[in-house]
Image (tube, rainbow, N blue to C red):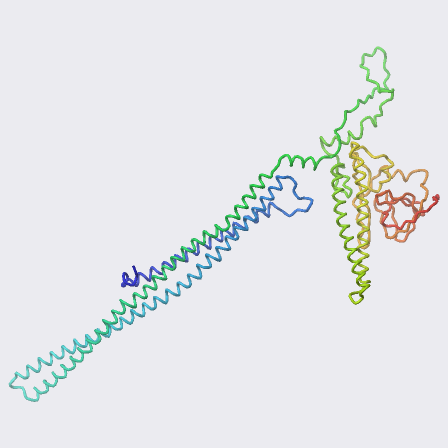
Length: 556
């Protein structure tokens, strides 16, 4: 069926139908637009959700528990899923909505052109009809006038009283009217024939062709809608495999949750290295009371060897110090993080120190590689001066060497702390001997828990950085050494390379280029004990002074 033959007289209805078709296409375009906006909003909300629950974190805060790792894996998969929703929105906007809008504009232009052609054809047919109708009416008027002339002539011709001139005049008028009627008849016949021909062309050629073009346009619109329906579904279908992989990744992450592994990580993270406290000994405060033989009191057991218990030391400090494991932590256990991690239990302290040593070793290796590269470049410049000035590399080489020395000093310092803690892990966290405490006095004193709490930072400065002490010393055995009756002998002297403020208790203030006496060497902790000429003693950073040891010790 074709519109040209079946609907030859339905021009107005076809006009309305084609307009409805374009309106429907634009309505579907609006639906697609709202759908892709929903996809964009959904993807944006998913990304915001992932960002909210997966905040930026430092390397030390990386999750280790399998449940946390799996959750962050699920968040990553969800982020990829959001990306696929964005792909869906983008494809819908480009391949469906954009295509529909362009096609809608083309349809409007084509429809307008076809309707204009139809209206022009109808206007031309109407014009032909008017011309034919005018000629018809003229022919009708001329025939009526000719009839009147015929009646007038017949009347005068039969009238015996009419003059000859009147008869001749009537006859002449009849002839003119008859001739005019014949001409009108011929014109009317020609116009009628022309109209019939144009009407046949209009309804059998022009209108069928125009309606056929409208029919083709409408069918192409229908086909286009079907294609966009399929494209709409294909956009979703193309992302289904990737979305399935995202969902499979979530399932894999869920299967990776291991409760035993998480429990082991808890042990590894919080194991202190201490042993549970032992039994409390009985403290007898009635030893000094006089008793009579008739007393019925129950006698207390005597200590072996007849030695009286010392109330001050009857309870081991180790046992006292570990009570916080089952109750409230003392203030020292809640102290802020310190450089040597002495605020941590031995096992945790060892792990943190080892991790720091590994990191410093990597940085040192980078500096060594950079130094070697600079030296090679310097050799090339020396052999080929036109390539560059060798002396221009010297500042960078010096800076690299300085950085290497700093890193070696830091590694040595952390290794000494590591050796210290490794020697204590197997001793139930007992305190070190007082001599060892004195050797490491600048690091702080030992806390009751068997770890170091009030630890000042080694005031290490190398230009242009100023040292930043964290925490001042508190009075302890460290300060008692300066109250000894016999001063320590001088074993060397040193010259201050930099100024040192000595604000922390137990340290010594010195100025740049000041000469001091050395009374105790660096024990590996980065501090040297020195004495001023005024007799004031204290610890100074070893890296801040240039030391010259003497062969023979002399008194101060």
